[in-house]
Image 1 (cartoon, one colour):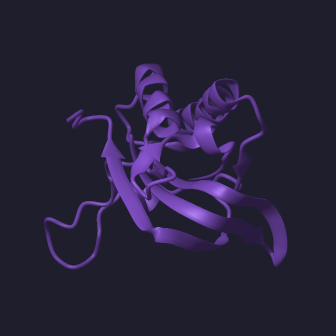
Image 2 (spheres, helix red, strand yellow):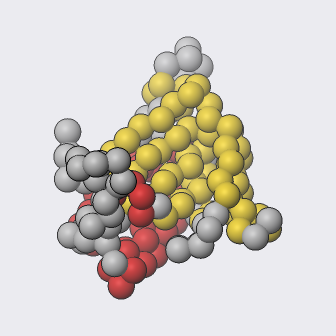
Length: 150
């Protein structure tokens, strides 16, 4: 499971020109679920997302976590994060989880994040054609992979 985490001042996702999820100040998270991911990946990654200290303190240092700023999360499923570009120019998505695996893990991530931050997680819609827009603050973008826990 991997995630692209962006510190944002605003972010939204639209489906068929209708806003489906929207936040101010927080994290926009793109989530890619791999075919070998499990509930333990959800638990580890959710804690990492909520605890990552990438928000500025009074001295301008990235020292605060999401809870310190009362921030929000917009979570978007994105199977293309599992792309392999090793061979040729057309990405392969063989490592991406089948929806029978990915959907439950995506829903578990929503539940776990809601439990950890104590508020609703804004989301897209799994498998939908979505238009995502955001104002990246910094810019600050972090990539986390549960298979590479550095």
